[in-house]
Image 1 (cartoon, each protein chain N blue to C red):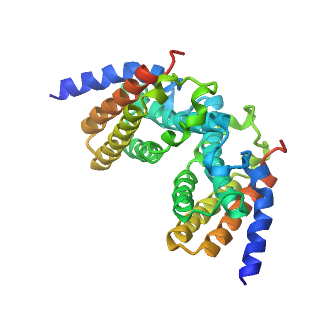
Image 2 (cartoon, helix red, strand yellow):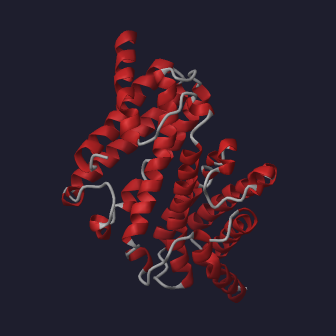
Image 3 (cartoon, rainbow over the protein chains, first blue to last red):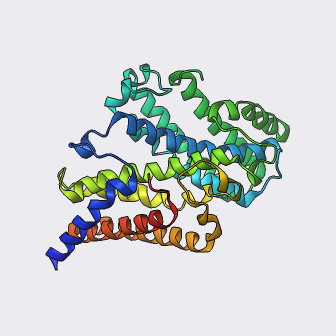
Amino acid sequence: MKHSKQKFARLALGVVTAVLGVTLTGTGVAAPKPEDAVKYRQGVLFAMGWNAGAMGAMVKGDVPFDKAQFAFMADRVAALAPMPLEGFTPDSKGAKSHAKPELWDNMDDFKSRMGELVESTKALAAAAQGGDEGAMKTQFGKTVQVCKGCHDEYREKP
Amino acid sequence: MKHSKQKFARLALGVVTAVLGVTLTGTGVAAPKPEDAVKYRQGVLFAMGWNAGAMGAMVKGDVPFDKAQFAFMADRVAALAPMPLEGFTPDSKGAKSHAKPELWDNMDDFKSRMGELVESTKALAAAAQGGDEGAMKTQFGKTVQVCKGCHDEYREKP
């Protein structure tokens, strides 16, 4: 039984790289490729922006405010918020991206800001569950300011 | 008070587009730009692959099997799994991506497969919590097969 499980796992592994489109380096987890780290964090951050942009359209009044949809997207943003940090690997400091090299020299501050983002998006999801439209909009504004604060500090101007 | 909240929300919104890098269309949520939908789903899928690739390296034995790290990444994959579907918007059928147009003609099947992925990744996270290395590897293999099944059907060969 143990053997057959291992065989199955090995069989499955044969397709992991092809299926997932991620190149594994020899050292695996310890040292993901810098360009993959960039792609990872940019992907997660874009997904946050995709949801936040749609929420922003509601807050701005470009589309009708839909509380259920807002709450759904607040959950998405809160689920994603803890993830980008993992992509700012030491090796990716010099990789082509919008991140300023200073970010890596101020990693404690950056981590603190990412922690603030996690808390702020949790508060956003909680406000959305609460169902008060004003509270949702207020917390959304606060969350966007957290995004902006970190971008101002550590992201190259586009 | 209400006014000041609204003012704050409006102020914050002024920076949403610039900060988040997402262009809002006039119709907002109802019709996100096809290229943004592609970028969103590719970002989320890459993030899944980033984690799964590292898990695969452990299963394959390229790096030591670290149960805590495996469980952490299983949670990441499970959190991301429900998200890609949202990026397969009707308007993005013709947009440049790896998705075959048949996907949109078989949306019920595709949704069913994405539901299977959600369940499979939940089972993976549960197995990882359980702490049995064999069970983790077996469920990982099953999850990869769900990825592969859908890619074989609906993804252009790279």
